[in-house]
Length: 459
Image (cartoon, rainbow, N blue to C red):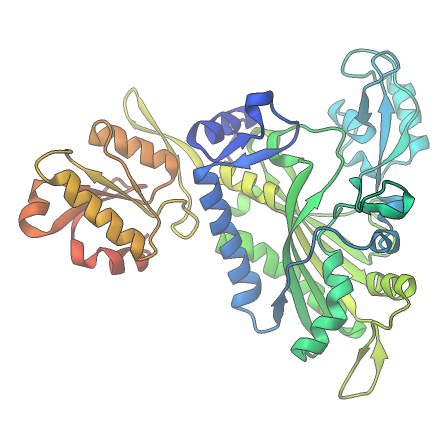
């Protein structure tokens, strides 16, 4: 397991253009981040791979893209208005507020303190003498709702209250009946979505691990109640395979953690987290799998007054399906990729290189075009090859600054699998030198073969 520190990943991400602090010229805005040029490409490649694994390659999936604003009743039905909250404590001197469970966990008293009641938290704080980060005494714990509230319309009053989505899956639940009708799907089948989520987090720390704006990558799988246990186990294995087979994560960096009974939401039959070892931070939650029963459709039927039941065409049985949920926070998966593929290697005595070893399908740039010299027609030939590959849909980079050796190192850090050098032999025989990122082995390839050669993903 890698023991790289979060600080190293933060500095690397900013220096290379993976992730920038948002609004940094104004001093930043807590827990919000922008994806830079490399980060935006990596993000899109991850989304593409997620869609392929969970939607395209399967025959039992549909995808929707839901609105950020939803009717306020949605959040009443889901329980978010009344129960989507964290227990906070307040510094009695500075009036700063903190997540009570985070203070207890940071003090090393216990893990997963989020399941504690307000009374249990107050008792631990008193017995263990926990203070605020500023060393002051703390108030008793009180609930703080995480929904981001706003107003829509010309007048601000109670009738215009709206919420930004607290979780992405609610679009799927309220659209489920329409999806059945328009696609003519039969159970079992799933609906997937990558959707924006907003949370009024109080304790924001650990870079992208906990942010106020992020995307959730959701699969909600609808099935007959009698088959829910079977599909729950199938999806549990399928999601783990996504990380090891599709993203190439080491199994040593992954583990399953089952929710304790008092930690699990009351309507869930079972719940597990896929934890990832974020370097020196250790194992932390990356994705959750939940056996939700029919609770969500039951609630939305009750609050909307609409019949959301499914009519089985074979048995004429009518029921609200059970739901198996797989939900991962995109920024956590992205951060896990930064830890997974960041590597420092000693290439020779006294010289170390940093390599971002992303698989070819995830790498931001698939190749880099490096003219040996700018003069003698090499630069022009390199630009011609660069333009040709881009028009073929191959995302490549052009780098002509500094020695070839330094450019190799830059591209290693970018995660670029192949460096293509245009030299004087290129002008004579229409071949180029291709250098492999991980092995640093080089070979000659014809220019006319480059597009097909790269698209075959020889990595």
